[in-house]
Amino acid sequence: MDERVYNFSAGPAVLPEEVLRNAQQEFMCLPGAGASILEISHRGKAFTEILEAAEDNLRKLLGLKDHFRVIFLQGGSRLQFSMIPMNLLRGRSADYITTGTWGEKAVVEARREGSVREAWNGEATQYKRIPTTDEIKLDADAAYAYFTSNETIQGVQFQKEPDTGSVPLVADASSDFLYRPLAMERYGLVYACAQKNAGPAGVTVVIIRDDLLGEVDSNKSGMLCYENHVKNQSCYNTPPTFAIYIVKLVTDWLIHTVGGLEKMYELNQKKAALLYEVVDASGGFYRPHAETDSRSLMNVTFQLPSDTLQAEFIEQAAEQSLCNLKGHRSVGGIRASIYNAMPRKGVERLSEFMRDFYKKNS
Ligand SMILES: *Cc1c(COP(=O)(O)O)cnc(C)c1O
Image 1 (cartoon, rainbow, N blue to C red):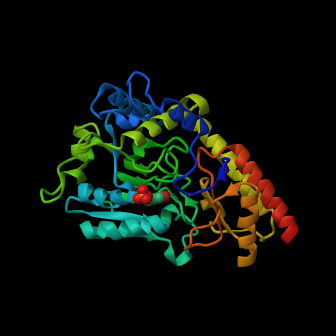
Image 2: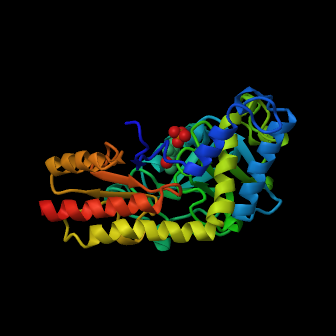
Image 3: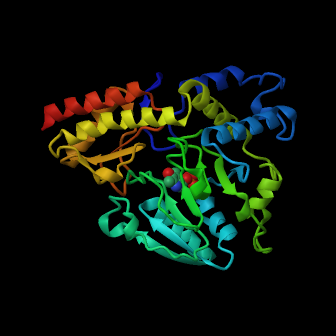
């Protein structure tokens, strides 16, 4: 394949073409730096400006008040499964709302660090839905309440954040970060690895309320303490400079080309509707994994009537440059990841393909 396809990969995932082109243009010599972004010091002026611009863009997009800190870390979202309890538990217990595979993995790691309660777990219903407010059994004394805003594998997404009262809300927003504005006043901490919706693999954005910062156990590595990264403006050690640069370009694109997160949300709702309409009009030929009011705008998951049809669907879609549609092995079926950077055109093409495939095979 020498031409770019429509890439429905769950992650690392599609990036805006404008971002790739800008990065290509500046790759040999970053303007003003006399060298490539790959070759310059993380403490020099050129990179410091990029780091500050990436943070400013995030602050602007999310309307972050001063009491929120923004840091760029490594270790992916997986390391956050551990860092969150290490930094926030402080001898107390935390509540976890588990709506899919990633939430499940987060609980496993949190248990290594201390006391964890499951305030809700959707495993018995195959993680097909988000709980109602009444179903979530919260502890008013919890150190924090944790949820996964979008479960990438199952394709279920919170339509609004759970109400946790005064307990700080912590969100794994890895696969829907920046897909719409966030009610940040509700959150204590939000984090996202970049490779789904915000940039390339290698950097994880953590936004944390400053009253939650503090020392961690002195027997733990300094790398695991949020406060060290905050105090050192993400340069406690050498940060992933290239990945942060791309996050800066992606957030530039969101601000200047897209026009902000309200606009992005509108576009995302319209894109997802193009696919769910075909699913709903197929009389059960396309069987959605998620219940209607828990559907994800980012990862559209559904099954076909047989494994044979599913294999044909994937193969014939790929012939039309609609690629990487195979669902995660644990859920099976099809998963179309239609993150911010997936152009509407790609989703239109997929929805047309789905209509045709249905007509021919139903
Ligand atoms: C991809 C993903 C992760 C894991 O991210 P890594 O960067 O590979 O550690 C965690 N949570 C969610 C919701 C994800 O989509």
